[in-house]
Structures are given as structure tokens and as C-alpha cells.
Image (cartoon, rainbow, N blue to C red; front, top):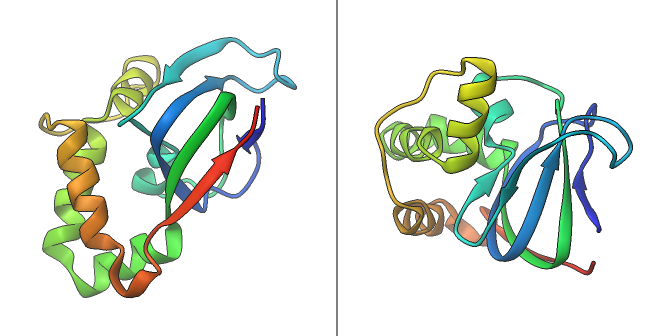
Length: 141
């Protein structure tokens, strides 16, 4: 399937999967071990942003048709400066995502309290200020 990102690329965005499924794998040209499948309402790419890791450490590929929303690192950083309370809430929501929890179990990443995917999507909508916070991406298989 179409690549959302590859291991070693800049970790410059996180994704909210609106429809479809994304396979997250260890590096290996699509042959790496499957770590998880991210589904509708779940997020991925958030670990590097929260931890301040500059490069991706895994690869993500669409499994069929996928529509996703993107929160860029620049907007994530601006959010922290302009709206620290909203940023902190977003970090708490992201930290409780299924993909973050899965990686936490495999890499000892700290997590926060639990929230639902719909809470994350509602908060994501708040961060799309001035039309620059999120962008729709449709990825064919």
C-alpha cells in the first residue's frame, strides 16, 4: 500500500485515521515485523512528536484506501506556545491512543490517562485554527 511514512524520515506530523487501516511495521522495505494495525479513529506518528524524536523509527503503509487528517509538527509546536492548556490536553489524549499504548509496551514509553478516539478527534478539530492545523489525505492502495 501507499506509504504514509518510512523509518528514517523526518517525524514532522501525526495522523488521525478517518477511514481504512494502516499497517505499522519495523524497518525493512515493507517486510519488517508488523507492530500494529491502526484503524478508524486511531492515531499514529504521535510518539516521535511527543517524545521530541526527530526521525521516524517505524514505517506506516495504507492497507487499501485510507483517509487521514494530519497535524504537522509546526502546528503542534505553535499549539504548545499559543494554547498550552489545549496542547497539554492533546498530549494526554495522544498518550492514551492505542498505537501509543502498543509502543509503550514494546519500548517503555510513558503514557497518561485514558481518553476515547472521539475526544481526540474533537480536540483535533480545535487545533485546526485558521485552516492550517489539519489537512485531509487520501491514499490509494
